[in-house]
Image (cartoon, one colour):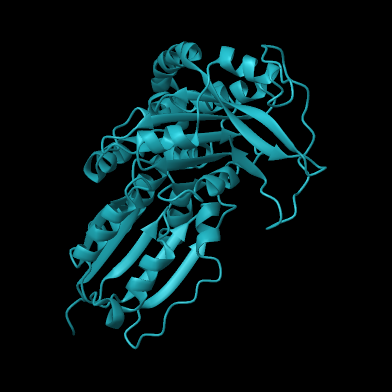
Length: 378
């Protein structure tokens, strides 16, 4: 009888994202206790892609199985992995992408690997309609094992649109309160959460939810605005206003997404931004929308600027700027008083800012592709 094969798995997961860490945890549940399987976990942050790519290069070994979980590599880096004779990297056994971001589907649409005699096998599974990569991966790796309630809850949390009830918000508050800065912390907390039923999470999360809502209420004092220039159905430019808040959304729970969309409704757009400076000096900006405009399309427009990265979904996306200066150059900020003065100069249509419920907005008409820009910031 031959000895069991020792396998090396490299799991590249979405950094600082509950869905990304839960995706990595699904691999741990599948193979973490298998003494013949060694798993290397590598965080992949869109604010520092070169660093993640370099870590993958250093960790790569001949015959390794590389998984991208809740993230997708850039085409150029995937070319490196798929052409070891050209890139000089060790030849992996396989490369598998398991993601659900629309931006990832767009990035790798129609991907054709370069010809290489030692190319690893390639599998790309990007389901942009699936609400959660962690649930997608669990269903793939552990099809016969019942999902814990907290993982089902993450499927509601990730797109920032499916949490409706106070019970959902309380359960989400508990999950969000858990430290996920490292895989060790995340895996420990996920194991604890896996033993809780939905009712247990709701009870434990109610006080946390109350604290989150109190902190969200205080954000209104620092709202700024930026101009978004769009084309109307007559191909004429119109100026709309996007509320912008200086805050890391991860510190405010899931209700922050509803709050941002509500601020967007006050200006008639249904979209708002929240930004903060990362430890390495880059700026991360979260985009929340009611789906019109498409948050992932806004991210795509911003990625046209050199050095800007990111992506996301129709209602929730994020982009990363190389510096605070680049962020301020691309997203000029105005106080509410300045916005009112700019409107008086006929910079854009008069859009009242008020606390009343805004009228329903008509569905956006599609614009001709490659002929007119749909959005731009001014």
